[in-house]
Length: 66
Image (cartoon, rainbow, N blue to C red; front, side):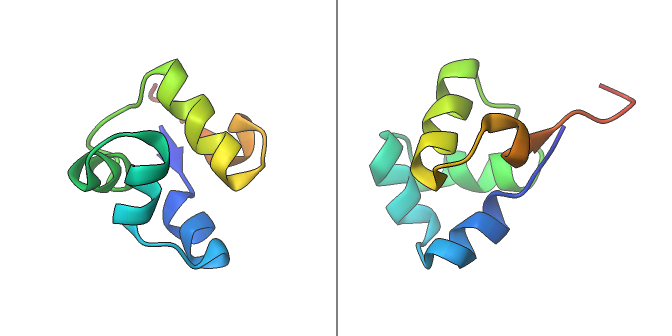
């Protein structure tokens, strides 16, 4: 699964730590999600989408290999 979290953070001008604080996770969690090393839970994906005020499908995209 790919994501656009890094781009969305740049648009909103927030750091990984600030995003992490907003959704109550560690900065390392945000880093692993951005790096595609970790697939977030549904709840976490929805929280991220809420911060960016976009549908979850605009932030997370399934790949053919998923």
